[in-house]
Image 1 (cartoon, rainbow, N blue to C red):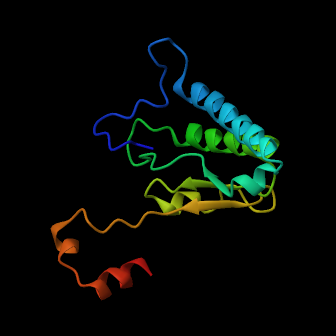
Image 2 (tube, rainbow, N blue to C red):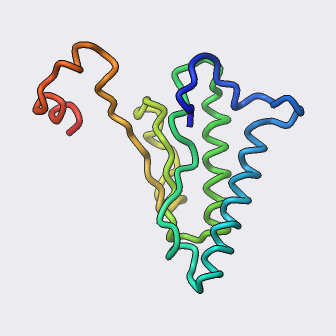
Length: 143
């Protein structure tokens, strides 16, 4: 998530300890998945009974020069395998379209990746013109 931050996105760079933020994020995903496995076992459930879906990345600003799209794609695929190997096939894996839905057309084909979904946010509040639209006008754009 961009956390509402303005300015440079440094997620793909190293942090103050020298560890790449992407590598640290993958470790966090591994820990989260194991947490859900253990939580499900504690109540005699499978992970897919406890959690329906995860979103591995939300609103990465791919329209910015500092975002390496190939690195982002590799991160999504690696996180997909972390989820699959720990939580199983029934947990859906979402990732956000980075506000550029056209760049994902051939990414993660269903023949190789199951139960994956692209998350799309259709914001209609960032221009004065759209703020003044009627309900019907907003629905026409979104649907």
